[in-house]
Length: 185
Picture 1: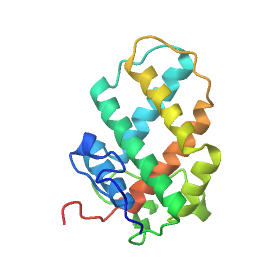
Picture 2: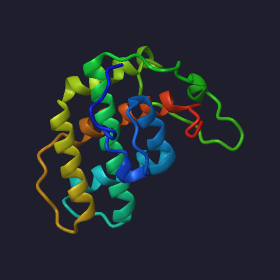
Picture 3: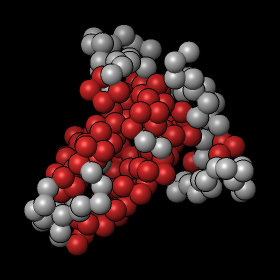
Picture 4: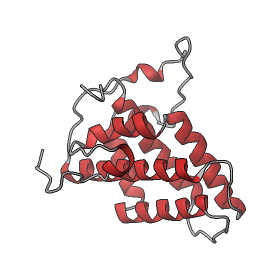
């Protein structure tokens, strides 16, 4: 792994009070501090549906939405670093979460992955950045966040479904990759 020139290259300190130079740790920090995958799914689906309706959303508190978007921005930065430096994961993905039956007391995890992608975060990241560049993803996330925290509707020029779909695939791959990581070991 190349040495990074800053102590907080993925901008995690602003939302989880911890700087890290390990892009795979960013994934674990995201779901430990900013919310679980089910919350991200619910928030993002709600937000993108409101963009389509040209009205402001009021269900998600702005603070939670801002924290979630800062975490998503860090995940995108980490994924871009992995993509540009061709890094392999620190550990094998825990695919037990994709089992047909949920364990007692757990929610069932239905993935948006197609079968050949399961457990291969590199393929998901390559598809993610094949759809849009890192700067285009940041711009799309900025527009979505702006729409989510204001009461004014914007005429947003984006394919909301595709942005939501690829973003969810990245978040799910990051979630699966982060399973079993001890945050404070």
